[in-house]
Image 1 (spheres, rainbow, N blue to C red):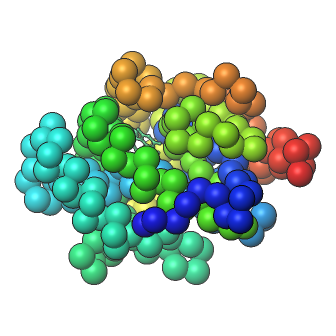
Image 2 (image 1 turned 30 degrees about the vertical axis):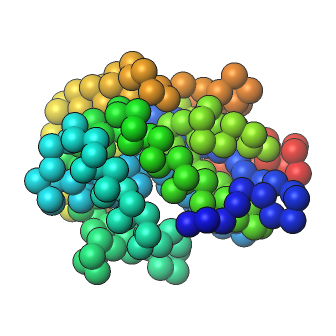
Length: 232
Ligand code: C5P
């Protein structure tokens, strides 16, 4: 994990897409990365994997020392998922679906509030800034992890709409949830992510904000591509 951010004196280009859960940033980032032929970093997956591994090891989710040791172990073996190889593994086991549960998301949002954990994840995330470019999605990609990104986007939508999208995503994966409970969970997670002192969820000052409450995925992608083509 010692790749420098800069190759041959030139910064590798980064596009950041931040936003709350259910804003569509995951799908849009993956599609954009494929369109450009760039790498795609889903930073939420790193936070989820850390939380999942911590739960598996019955760690106290506030135990920074144990969590940092875990980050060291996980970052050594983590492979960025791609469309051809979408599986996320932990000690050889496929944990891709296990990472998507609300239990895991909730634990991720708790460990993600610890400044030491966020600091430890900086190098892990920046490691993926490799040629020809990186599309990074998360909560603080444009504000903290890649402040010098070529383009910063912030996707958002009304909370009720985001909860409905999460509901559909989980249902499609065969995970039954209650929409009313999900709305509460999404709001609680938003509140914790936005209120935390360490890298709260917020648009970078120079981010382009896209509210896609009334846009479908194709229209959102069209707006994103317009912004990308304006700078490239
Ligand atoms: O994006 P996703 O829902 O997978 O993220 C799970 C949790 O990880 C978020 O609720 C947030 O607390 C945390 N996270 C973060 N910073 C990021 C990405 C995710 O704090 N860049």
